[in-house]
Image (cartoon, rainbow, N blue to C red; front, side):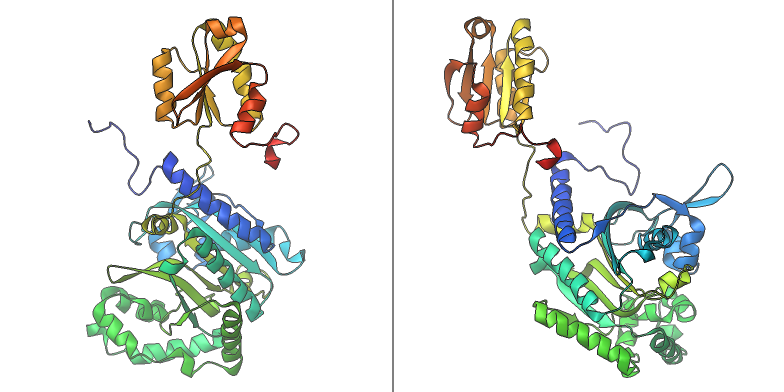
Length: 436
């Protein structure tokens, strides 16, 4: 096989038909659970004003410094392909006065995102993400329900047993400010044992020091001050209630005091779903409370919590677990015909079969009968209907059972009802397509 002239750009990938089966299954499971829980779908533009992410996420963060794709419009305004979804959703929440809706506002989205520096294993520069956001309520029960929602989705995807839920609290904003001071005091003077990235984080975002994967930095992190020792009583109560609710729901978790968030607007509950491959931990999805973000973006103080997972990562785990998604693209009937008259007669029959919800392929090209039956086998069609000049003249049609290799000639009148009976189908003629 020769090398193609053109290939997909670095960091981008094609979603081929077999992989779309996984994507469709993932989306169906996610939508099903979100709808049952009262979530409504939202979509924001692929690009936003770059200033949105600079102000919401922070200019000194990796997302803004390393990951954003920027472009300019005709007036010279700086735009950014969305690297994450929370800031755009909060922008839409404020812009469209969604705070006037019944609280909490529960939203979900399944969209493409873009990051120049996607360092996750197998990470793409363009990837797809499923996320939920709950805005307007700070009850710990909401935290537990969001976590439980994702856990149930993972169960239906067949990957829950591969994942462990990591859980922690980072307390209130006041707790975090005190903790940052303690971290800076602890790490100052130990720079020689720190990687270059951690040296930079010491002044810019010290909480990220606890997440470094370098061995020496992990040793330092294990001996660093613990946030739990300075948590306020209110923060401790919030976290304990989250744990109590998860226990009631039967959701297992592991407490992880080193699990933090680098972005300043996060508070209280943080969580991630981890998998382990060849002894290395990989984050499959994560979230937490961001009670400070709405106010930072110009709104009134408003509590919120969210979660995101990269769909490509979830699909990789589905494949590893041997999960086979349902295939609704199967061919029920291949309609073979021979001659111009037969082809003309076959077209309305093909459409009538499709109108009854039967997946039907036929009247393609000018292949011989042998070639058409061979194509039916390649498509793994359940049945073939064969129409030639003789059958048109006699008002009959040949029905071939592709699995058994047997065939019979039957009247063409009533063939729709016959195929519905054989396929165990149900007439859909009285239903609209969107009701299927």
